[in-house]
Amino acid sequence: MFAFMSRVSLQVQRSLVKAENALHVQSREHPHGWGIAYYLAGEVEPHRVRSVEAAFTDAKFQRVSEFLTSHAVVAHVRKATVGDVRVENTHPFQWGPFTFCHNGTIFGFEHIRDELLSFVHPRFRALVTGGTDSEVLFFLALTVLEASGYDLESPPKGIPPRFREDLAELLGWIRKLSRASGDDPREPMLNFVLTDGRVLAATRFNGGLSFSTQKVRCADYDICPIANKVCFGPRRHAIRHTHLLLASDPTSPDDVWEEVPNRGLLTLDSDFRLHVGPLPGLDGPDPWYP
Image 1: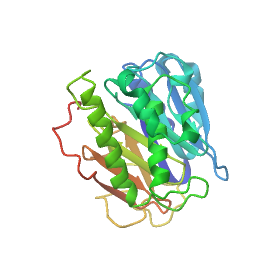
Image 2: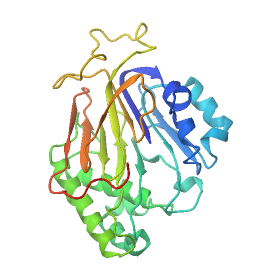
Image 3: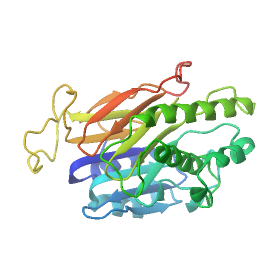
Image 4: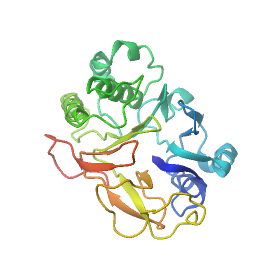
């Protein structure tokens, strides 16, 4: 999975197609469909394109990526584990302004699906149309986000502080249910990205997830209109960043990548202030997937 947020709209073709480890390349190992959601200035809801074809063989992926210019993009290439290969099961998922993608598996999902759905807010429950654990996780995350104080209809400028504790409780509960199913001794993998194009939240939970706010070199530096850019050198804290890249597998050596801690949460507010740290109360073994 891949996400991009910037204070200005920029082309994302390099991360999707041209970079050494672009999503186009990663789709050879994740061939069960692809999806891209992107936000345009002045519009609340994202545009979304999805396909069940492998991105590396689908000319549509190339066409969409070639000219895509946006300030916020979420993209995913799927390796199916739960749910068959069809558009309804293809990420990113969407509700209103929110888009979501997930890397991983909730082991024993077929045994605990009904219990997970019982926690989803009733107004979201009927919207689950596919067969994946990922779609249920999306609506669970929205349920918790709203319960933590985030007004989904009139969004504030940032993720509420309470969301960190509420999300940790949710993921701990999912871990407990998954373990009790007896389907797999490992913890579930619950890496996800959730955004409404203004703010973003992302978890790393037993998979890879890296982020970048800094660059080694930048093809857009001369045309970027942001004054006093802070895109090079060590990442500074408590400042407004210029951009954020997120990737389950880093896409390019042009960017300086840092890992989100396992069982950790990254949030970005609408002022481009970043917070990265562990989720409370979720200690456990080292991640089982690199």
